[in-house]
Length: 233
Image (spheres, rainbow, N blue to C red):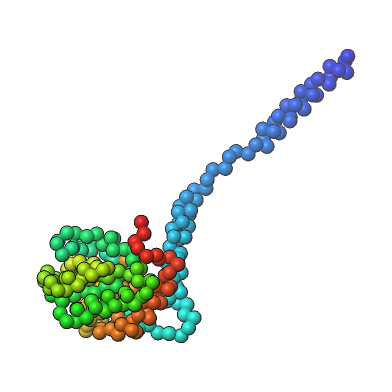
């Protein structure tokens, strides 16, 4: 009897020890480290921008075959100003961000549109058609830098499908973004703006469409894996 009484406390002690070990073995839940959300956000943004970065790297840096550009590459590219005061011919304001999402083959001139202006507009239309099945990734834009009336015949030609987007913008505001070559005028060039609103190429004055076509083809090929026809939501 005395032996059985002495064993009871030993059993209780062992049970207490086991419970204590079990409690101490449970680790508190880990809390997220400070800054982890910010790092995740940066990684997501980098993943979204990666295709664009790679395409420009391929075009500007990696050149598997020897070649030279006919047009001038703008380095660094120039972002479209968010506050660029664009208006329709009817005077309605247009947000500059609405132009993003497509490659823009751009003519800049007076609304009066002299013979050189008409030539640039004709080249603009022909170059887009020369892009073949990729032409739906290119839109035609005409930026008018004054209040001069557009000749009716020119205006009618701008409505041919697909129509040219015609907008007015003060020359002083436009010059904060685009610029002509040294000693040249806007209407002597064609300008290329990428789908992100970056001005990145300008033709020589009085451009040769056949030679410039090759530059456009390279641009569209280099960006084919991230840019699609039509503006994406």
